[in-house]
Length: 293
Length: 340
Image 1 (tube, helix red, strand yellow):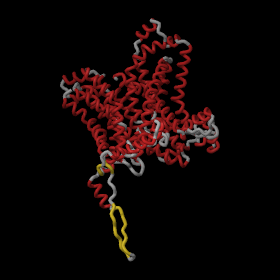
Image 2 (cartoon, one colour):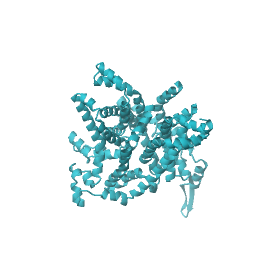
Image 3 (cartoon, one colour):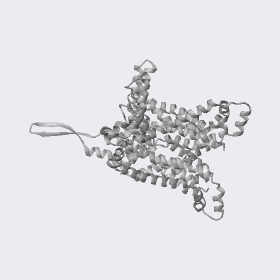
């Protein structure tokens, strides 16, 4: 590749470098800026006087004595009990991922192996369901959930998120299972296994790369969801994203917007680590659908 | 696979989808045709020393009984659809009578909540989608011609705007373009107007929301195109080069045709996702300047008075919109399958 780069005329190289530098600034700078700013006081992060205050923290020094302050994090996590929301998020994400993968692997496997026409119709229906904006479904849940006292519980939200997740999970796992040769489980069935035994003993040991990738996306859906969690969870069961939104409503008036800033940084950190460790799987998963497309 | 084993394997996810996606859609349709019961008013005559007076009170018992008898509410047909908050037939007719130019008519229409929402949703969808495709393509070409050792970190940082929670990503940008934030100050400096504020201006707010949309989705197009670029046939490129094609001609006649099927895929995913634009409007608290269909439903559902019927009607109209957007794709998928 380096030889290819040398063959480029200088103007092209400069253009490429310029595009990459601008894009890197656009993509990464907002995160670095917010991370840096979360350790300052509000007067510095939103500086009326001089934008450079946010870098040097003139008011932070004046108000707290140090160049950095953890007061935003303390206020959010301890005072406003963000830890409770974090715990709820962990519970919701864990169950959503495990349940969607269990249902998804069974369904995706069957869809990949069936040669009948109804398997195609099933996938097409799933594609239509995938296109439904979740908030339209929420307006269908609410009256029923209120009547049957299902509203507000974590378990209801988990099941709803699993269901909303299913179309995507099925499509993704279906294309992964298509890549596992059918001879593998068929030979096991010739040897006397039932369909389920073949699935358990032959397919499960080799399916993990696809399952991990799909699991990452299920996790993202549950972790990032706002529409469903904000409408279906009661105050004490709130996950992190609706909690941040409620900070904006209550704390902006109190002048504690820094709580929201540090909560935002806290929510971003796990995503950052996830991309760092699973970059290859994420890229693979995003392109899996396209290559089939 | 045998019918029976297929059935048992698919059953759990089929039940989940029927219960929580299919039935809610039906319930939304039914609900949109009903309105909540009116409270039963009764007239009570109360007599005291000074004579008798009639007063009206709400008959709680009768109201409860009426609700229990028909929990869905009163059948209203299409009235919810036609009222001022939705298709607003009466108001549209009035505006049509009152205005003389198309421009004026359009401006007046944007005062009606439903048309305001659909106006922004459509603009957002059809501006952001092409921009995402173009920007993603440019980044993919640039990253692909970078040194191999640099590509890992480049991809890592490129993924961040997409992986971030939409609500959170929009907040991060919103704080930066705040009049007291770094971009906001920069904009004021560039425009030479110290009072400039994105929050206060409708056009700036629309632009900012779309900038967020492109920022958030461009990585998706980039990754898909980048993967596609890895499979461009080197032989064809070599042949084009031998025939004297320069870099631009190579891209124009070899790379772009190779990536065209991927473009359909990206466009489909982006149309579906952009049509449901919602979180940035909440994060930017933009509802005074721009609303979307999803936001309108959210707004009806939230708050003290839950306007379930109104939300349901908007939901049905949104679902119809999604169906129209999706129909070309469905037809294509179906034809592809038939050919097989």
